[in-house]
Length: 155
Image (cartoon, rainbow, N blue to C red):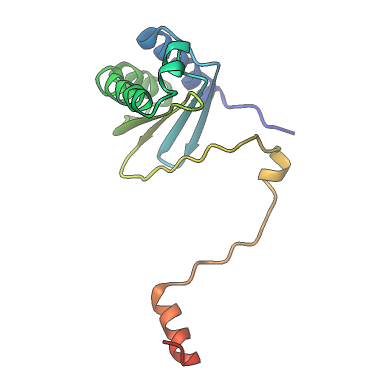
């Protein structure tokens, strides 16, 4: 069973759709909102206009579409940041956006000193698959790898 989004997430998603339509004239087909501690990640699906998608078919055009949206977000996102504060009750410290021109997806991250990496999967996952419990091993440190190599006599 998929859990419904929280009311706050739904409000943020609606604010993002409104912001996109007001600033670009094109609303995304869907918006996903994910909160992890102090990082809010918003993904807009199919957020580019038909003209932008066409322009993004070439590497030069894709770069122009990316830069346009970065600049637009940089200069116009204050109203969205204010709306997120109204909805969540928390100030937004940092905000960045990234456009994937091939798919038309746009990701906005509102974070503070956080590195956000975004991986767009080729298809969705079922909630049961995602929530499956799997043991995770801690990665080995460089010094422990060095010690193991010394013990085995490897150089």
